[in-house]
Image 1 (tube, rainbow, N blue to C red):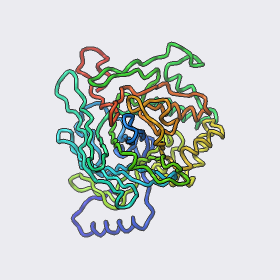
Image 2: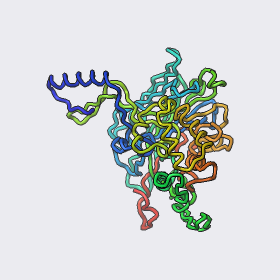
Image 3: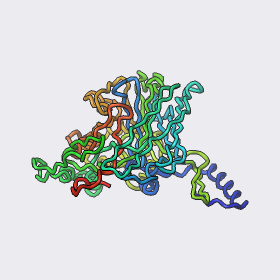
Image 4: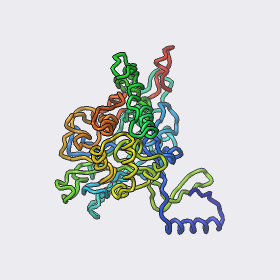
Length: 460
């Protein structure tokens, strides 16, 4: 609820009454989803979690890397107030380490108010509660955000280095700032695929991906596909060939929070659900305090309990499997709600609309519903290679979490398609990922000054 501050006793009484009312009534759920798929999110981009990533550091498999991207489709401009984290949000990494749907540990990040890139960084406060009592609380420690470059009138502009803060007491490494959006997908084709399954249950249009990619032969075999070629080179960003597909997220930035934590701090105790103690799960949430007050100087502050606005575990669940009227409800729900079966019937119906068989429906339910919509990793599955890791025996297919390079869209479409290969022909990110933490690609900068060549005018 938004309240206008007044210097009247009536207002004070009203606030007290509202607080008491909120404490006595069940919480209202507001919500969002990955890359703006929930109705409520259209009015609250700051709280929108795009994606969650979870993988072992390929340079040191004793460390766990967790990445949250928020606030999608930030353009490659120099808007002074664009790359700001919301100081009224709590960005929370929920960690599950006992094999069920209940989070056991929490890594929380909050930011000071930001007013623009010319005034210096926002300051993050980072704390970790491992759920092990007073000896399991770590932090808080403070870290500055990366300040985006405000360029002079030069031919080309270097993106800022991705500065990392290391807490000397805990060894936790932290990064927060604007970066290239690491997700890659032909979102237009994916949405047409989902819509076709709703309009024609059991017989979706699987050809939409090939049609979008320019494979115009009926069987998709036309060798003259409309290959997009490499993305334009930019300072410190090496454009790569993404394949024939059209990446909706190419050319856009996002806000990124990345943490690298010693695995020993996150590992759970062995039990009958997590026999080895080597499995951990991750669910990301953004939360606002229940009461929001707008003062006459335009500033917003909150008080009261934190309420989840958005959540993200496994990719594409809400996008593809939750019906539109319940998307907000899904994002405001908990992983315990998933396990209790709150959305099970909707997920099953959506999968039947896709023509998914019973065996694959059961497989998918075990992944995303039975123990909650939680991204999971086995800490004994190795991760190695450049760009955050790319070894074939790692990644999501081997309970190795989700790495930046993993093509989760193709894997999801193939599972839904009963194991028959189905993909969007977007094979990777438009820029190379880094080889050290935080591994994401630097922010996309405005193109160089024009030289009467249309290729230099593709972006702002």
